[in-house]
Image 1 (cartoon, rainbow, N blue to C red):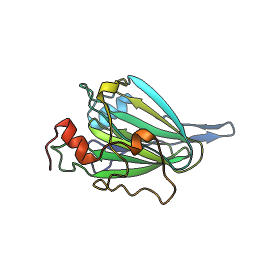
Image 2: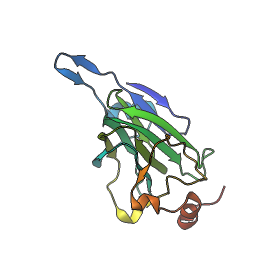
Image 3: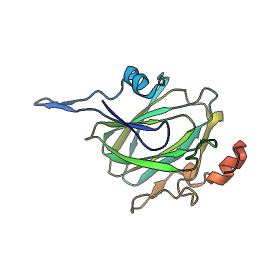
Image 4: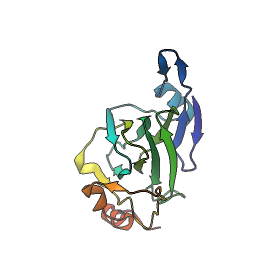
Length: 186
């Protein structure tokens, strides 16, 4: 596995080799021992999710305030996405900054989204399938969303028709979320 930090402390992209032969292909997409060895942090898997999206679907910006935290390990198994991570740690020098990485079913990449980060993605193709592992289970009382079109964050979404759920479209701005959660302003 090849590991590369993404410029926001704790956020990583991993790339594994795809093994192909006459039968098709095989890839290893998660290794907790290597994650701990390279990043210095454990990644205990508690829940696994999969989504299927049509082209233009934006999911997020979602984040959890779970007391034990919630990190995500995200990969695209079919189609393609632009994956976006937003630093929501008030004490961080990169607070409110974002980074994006393109993932596809063809490239064997995965993203480590650390605790206290917002996460979103846009489907770049029809029938895009995303799988992700979580370090804590879904708990509605700790789940929050920030509007993915928030002007303060200013994510550079691809130039295409964006399809948002009502939950994401009506989600509060970053400033409203910071105020509601009692984060200090920076």
